[in-house]
Image (cartoon, rainbow, N blue to C red):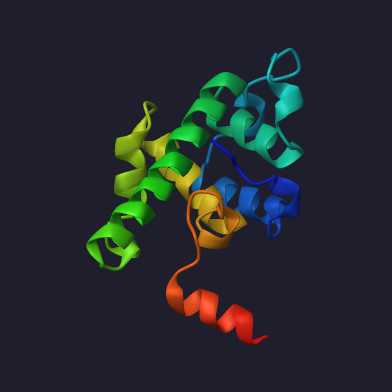
Length: 140
């Protein structure tokens, strides 16, 4: 599944700072990712996040995909049922869709929210604009 490039997101390093405030682990205990095979697939902000949360690149990419896929599925389900999508997409829902520790999933959710990955316009292939969004974009 497509995941937006973090470089185009709102202040990714600020999002890492948000997660760092939640974690009190000293920097000496951060994991070393210098030899991680997936390091090249991650931005510096994501590498820092993985180091702090003690996640390998593979585990992070898997959890990221599961959480983003869960968000998209939640939006599609909300469209089908004509209800507000935010009713069920929260930290708890994100924790349920990924196979990592719930505290780490909660931190990932906070990071993804801060960088703006839970915004519908990032997934046009999967989530077409809603009727009210499409009508406002054609007027401009």
